[in-house]
Length: 242
Image (cartoon, rainbow, N blue to C red):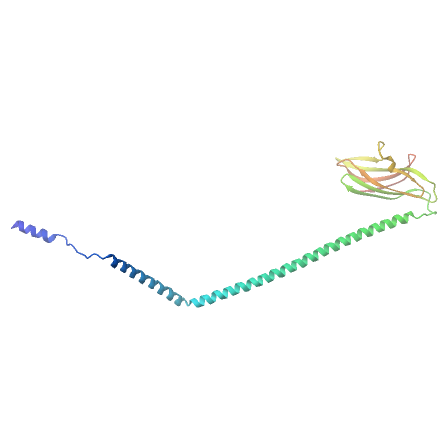
């Protein structure tokens, strides 16, 4: 009897087994399609209701997009118009500047021409014969210009006052220079000069001499003196500072 009792307890305490009927593949696919359709419908409903809650419809969004495009087109047209106006104004300004530069160049040219005419007038006025002028040789004009770093151009007018005889002599140019802080004197024509003839004088009323003097490199001229020599004696002399 004890053994029967233990067999009954073991049978009562054994775990229960649930028996389920398996789903077919068609049932599972149909269930998944139903879930997907339900989710899509819920999403569409939420999207439409969210736009409705926000007060925005598809037509309103389309109209607002068209309005924005119109504004962009209008602003682009205004930008292009302003850019064209700015380019036109800049072109007119460049034309005015070019005209102003041309006028300034013409003014400078006229001023230079006026100075040259005055210089020529004084020169030709000095050439007029004057019987009452004092006898003797005079340097009426000495002009020195720096034409290059180491070159000086000179123009000299030598005249004889009164009714003098024919004069023969030599023009001598003495240049005071500074090189490396030291002062030196240069005399033209040099004793070994190959062109002594360009400094010779031979006239009755006047003679004009001009040319270019070459200086050593690094030399700065500070003063030029012109002398008229007659048999080694100074007949006339003048100087200009540079």
